[in-house]
Structures are given as structure tokens and as C-alpha cells.
Length: 326
Image (cartoon, rainbow, N blue to C red; front, side):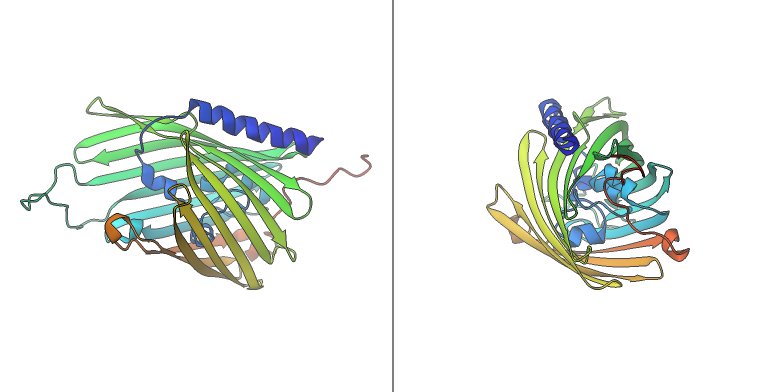
């Protein structure tokens, strides 16, 4: 009964958020997701969310951790030189809480050649730099599952025009037995407002995800699938897998279906774990409009202090029943 209640709450959360959602695609680079591990799985990670990148995919996932982790990511957006996407974050658990603090940035590297018009003149306002500071809190909810929330402060720079605003995310993870987990996340609920010094207003449209993960062979094989809603429109569908050849070596692959399942692109990657240092790589094989190659390499690293000190195991989605309870 508790699980039925939890699933119902998750569905209500997403449907309510969809009813509020609208807006443009400002800061849309942040919707591509972070972390080479998750991206190598095609972005099918909302029901997995068991590392430091959970702050982006599903904030509820931080309560699965049992240690302190520091992680980061770097890569180019859509394979374009100079268009960088970076992330750094630290997460920890305390009592029944998961706590995280992260920074994400997308923009142009110094010295990038500007875009030009047909006459060869630089396009005004070409330079841009977007970033966000993310604070995360997650907890167990009455043995039903895990719930988490983000508070985000956005900052943007477009030429001489700067802007800022706040956003909020919610996430839920629910265990359906020993192998299945359902995840739901609602990002930028209702659309996050950004105000610019030019007095213009902008909205980061909501991104809502629902997914299921199946973990086999004590987590050595993970199969996952997600479905996105960008605002009130159906977005991409994601499928992915992770296979651990040994505990220290993982291989991953995934696919992303776009444009109402008419188009697709694929992802591959792998990772190693040595003494609590996780190093991951993902290669995203994607073709952009007009046949432009948008393939890109993403690199991530994450360090677990718990692994270094002999801990660090991921906790189950639901906490065990206290001793003596029926």
C-alpha cells in the first residue's frame, strides 16, 4: 500500500508540474544532462541516480549514497569547439539526509572565433556564458521511497547583458521490489524566471522525466529507460545499459529517440574505479540539423571518500524495517 501511495504521489507531482509548465528554452544547454556515466547510458538515469550527478538527474538519489563524494565533468556542447559544458559538485550524507552543492556552466571558451554574418561581420551578442549554483536536499519518506529537492540560482551573460533568477526541482525514487526502481523528476517547476539588465524577461521551461531501472546480478547489470516532457510537449525517450565486467570496470551504451521517435542517436562509454576514484568517458554519436556532425566526447571523474576509508556502498532506495516492527 505504501508503494501504491508513493507512485500516486509521484504521478501527481509530474502532472501538476506539467499543468504549470511553459516558457522558452533559455539555458537550454543545461537540459542535455551531466556526467559521462549517465550520458553513456543515453541519459536513462532518472531511476538510477546513484552518484554525485544525481543533483541534475534526480535529487532524490543523493539519499542512496553512504559517503562523501566530489565530482566533475567537462565536454563540448554538440561537438562544437569552444562551446564548453562543465560541472563540479560535492555531495554527502548525514543521518537520514543527502546534501549536495554543485556548479554547472555552459558557454564559450576564451579565444573562440565568433560567429559572423554573410558579410563576415561578427554577430552582436555572440559571446554568452550561463551558470547555475545548485543546492540539494534529499531524505527517506516513511519507507515509501526517497524524495529530494533542488534550489538553483541561475546567472547569465550575453555580451553586455546579464541576467539572474531562481529555479526549483523535485524528485522521487520508489523501490518496486529487489530489482525494479521507478524514478520521477520535475526540473524548473512551472518555468524558472530569469530577469536581464535589459529589462527583458526569460523563462527556462520545465523538464520532466519518468523512468524505470532494472538491476540484475547484484547491480552488475543495469537496464534503464526514461521519457521526457519539455514543458507540455513530449520530449526525448532514452534507453541505456551498464554492464560491469568486474566491479572496477564498466561498459555502457544507450540510445536517444527524438522528434517523436522519428530520429535517434546513440551513445557508448565506459568507466574504471580504482580505490574510490571513478573515471568515466562517454562518446555521443549525434548528427545535427543540416547533416552537421555533433558527436562529442565527455569526460568525468568522481572521488569517493567513503571508498577510501572502507565504506561508500550505495544504500537501498527504501530503508529497512526497524528491528521488532511488524
